[in-house]
Image (cartoon, rainbow, N blue to C red; front, top):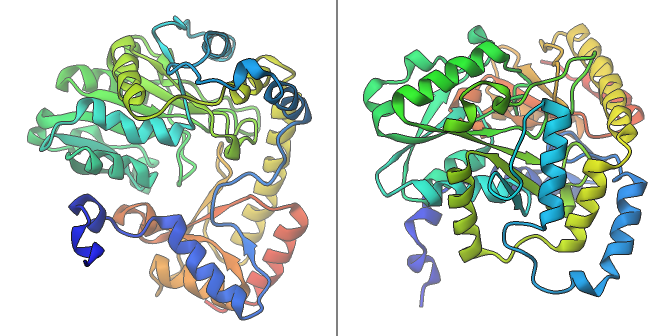
Length: 390
């Protein structure tokens, strides 16, 4: 039997997952003996703070956490999330109906379309953007429609440019600020216009916000839910991965409109059995404990950002200094595509960067660099790039 012929269309129609393809190319270069500096995947290199690890060690030995967890998340974890939102954004959430624990925000984002998209429905997603937005819509049988983020618009979507007939058919709109991959940020006036747009077109806003705490120079990104009326039309996804350097722990949460949160929870209760409660206990410690680790994280990445932005611009690569995220969105030199330039950099310098078109066709003309190695390694990367002819 030919198993390939049995694969579902939703699998055969998928492009290779961006970061899996990067790993393949990286392995090819490594086999040639080249030392790799990986600035491709946004995986924090800083260890999880010690007080969170200590709580996990304590919790994993507790037999009460060895049974099946609650589908929606431990009540104490959901209360910790609600308390964090109140302190950080001034947003009051009902932990019983407006907070849902996730096995990482990626899982919740991928499952959200299953709750609302019927085959043939349209799902809007910002592009360039996290590939899971498009994939989630497609897996649910929906029609993904890209909404372009252009530099001339500060990488904010032009809502009026979305065709009216498309908007009328759309059920969901995925977008993300502070933005991956561009590093752009959104302010209150944009979110207010987004709420108006969602009301007018009866679209559920799915705002992906894992980078709100990774910000610099005193800038504090806002939550979409701070805007009046946002909770009527939307849901926000957050994660402990970037803020507390817990990427491998797989813990996040969705908050906002109770019906949207409940529908996502119903999908999850039929697909997974919830997050390991020992991890949730560690998550409570992260959200309610000493936040000095967050300030230290900001200081570390701000130093790396400043180092690389200065160096890249000095060598003729155009890049703006982002207010948030640990990504640099770099304009590709004339004469290169995104993929061609990323391949050249990898093969000639051993530095992994991500071609912008991997985040959607609208990312063509850019590459993304993640500041996920030490300053010493970044300085080495700078020296290698200085010898790159482009």
